[in-house]
Each structure stands twice: as structure tokens, then as C-alpha cells.
Length: 258
Image (cartoon, rainbow, N blue to C red; front, side, top):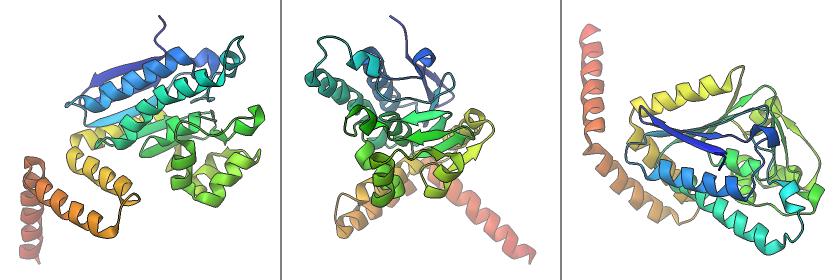
């Protein structure tokens, strides 16, 4: 069986690669299952301190495999089942207390937006081209797009992407907040970010991510209580203790030098 989603664990980084370049990394049943399994494995591994998502070939992900959908005997129940499998992978990434960075080149369309926006930080290539494309085939958003796209760029702009044929290039994607930055070498830049996270206070970063995601789903008082408990738990971890002592020592040294 071809491995269309590859997972490599090294130096605290779970590197997840979309590897179906001959189809612009369009997702079929097989690839969707592999994606789900890779995401769950990456986020459940206690050694994972950061997740890095990249893609082989000229495109990040062209969405669902329309050629597969056009096959004889293919019905809506098949589409629903496939989406639900991939949704498990997206939920594993978004719901994890592990920071996720993605490098995206070329076309990102349809459900590919969901795969990209499951990351907490996206580095785009200057050749990035983003489009909704769902209406081209008479379908509705899936793979978290209706939620993740709206969170990233707001309701009005999300509707622009999904209801029109407008295509966003890298500069506009950065301007709208769809991606965080553009780079000549997005894979290297994303790897640099993942390494920084893995070498740093990864647990605290992951908890910060969790708190931000949870904030939109509950009242303010609940978030305040969660913040208080989380920062106390963070303080008791050795990664915080070392940094607190180093910060205090550096501050004392600066004060004595004045």
C-alpha cells in the first residue's frame, strides 16, 4: 500500500508529510485514513514536543480527490464517512496541547484549507495560491474549513473565499491573517520554528494553544479559572523552574551593572 502520509519522529519533532504529489496531494480514502492515523500517532506520542507538516510536490493540498468521487457507485454516505475519518486527524492536531507548524506551497484548495489551518502557525511559499473551490463541484465545506477559516480571517472574508472564485496569493494571505509569513524556503523556515519550540518550553506553549482554542467555547470566568490552574501547574514543571531562575539571575545582573 502506498504511504501517502509519512510520519517521522526525530529530536522531539513529529514530521508529517503529505506524499501524493502526482495528485497534488488530493485526499482519497486511503490517504485520509493514513492522515488520521499519523495525526493521532504524532499527538499521542509523549516524546512529541512540536509537529511539523509539509507536503511533497508543487502543491500543499488540492482538497478531496474529485476523480475518486466521480467513480461509479460513489454516494454521499461515502463522502461523509471519508470526511469523518479525516476529521479525527484534524481534531487530534487542533485539540492537542502540542504546537503545530505547517509549510505550504502552491495550491491550497477545498479541504486542503482545513489541513493547512489545523496548524497553529503557517509559513507559506511565495507561490501560494488559496481558493475555496467547493462551489465549483457543488459541495459544502468540510475538514474543519467552516470553523478554522472563520477563526483565521473572520466571517466576512471566509465567506468571500467560500462564496466567490477569488484566489488569494501569498501576500494577500499574510495580509488577511490566513498565514503568518511567506518565505523563499517555507520548509526550512517551518523546521526552524519547530526546532525552536521543541528546544524551548514546549509544554507551556502547548498549554497556551489549548487555552486560546478553548476560550471561544466557554465563558470568561471558566477561562480565568483554567488560566490560574494552568499557570500554577506550569510553574511546578522543571522547564519553568529553570527559566524562572535564569530570568531572575539575568535581571539581577543587569540591575547590579547599572
